[in-house]
Image (cartoon, rainbow, N blue to C red):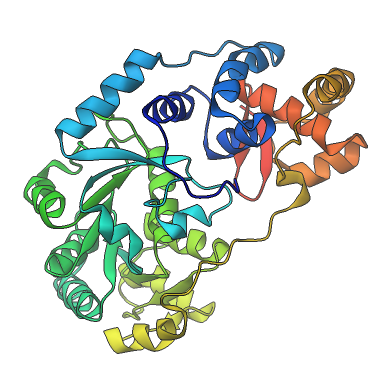
Length: 373
């Protein structure tokens, strides 16, 4: 989504929010719609029609509902920031695709500063908690904003250690939903002295499927991710994997091989993550890139949004629809491979996939893959 920085009018902001809150519209679908139509109003109007062509129905929030969410967020001292706006975090803007918008509560100026993510076990050891707090304080003292997910354990200790220098909490639920509930005082402190970020609407309780999206935002905001005590297959390792995909640095604190909480971090070190024992270890790696632009990841040809040419491409899409549906299965397939197997123009295949996704019949998987729901 390569639109120059600009401020949105209030009408545009409501339209952006309506499309982002539309059922079955995730970041990739949003980017494809906006790239195809070039105008948020046209994309918003086209989405239900495309879903119908894909065999489903689509509900779009009303203008009044969008206005109500913006007003309720403002009453809490927050606002909606879209990817095209100057205040949108540069790390998130460089993602492919970026989140179309985020809700923020607190000091938005922190989003323009360099960030470092600190994540780890919820059931962390006393030493792990102490190290997380000290590391966050030291990195904050060096000018970095500490970002984490406000979970219990390492996340909470990292936020607490960085309250005096700047911290950012990325929530899996709505920006007003404190999870876990015991972090209510920490939440109040962060909204007063730091910033809270969320992709989700106000009042939405966090669901399991929201946490990977939250983790992608955490790593996307930051120059690097520090993992402190993470078991195998933990959410912290998901964040580290996103960091690797996004071209961010990954750091890990070593631990005892007898402690299950150390297995994930130790494996990251074996696979090339930087072993760290202090803030200086992190800063030694990051100093050359602090203040530099974020590099955008290379885009696969199959992930390229459709080029606008509505009638001709839709006619071609009708011709290849049956072939696309025949090739899809519950097992994910790379979009590039799907296009190669069908032997049809990429734009036509991508339109069919867009229609099926809006209809709720397929879902996107990491790595530019798609499958039947």
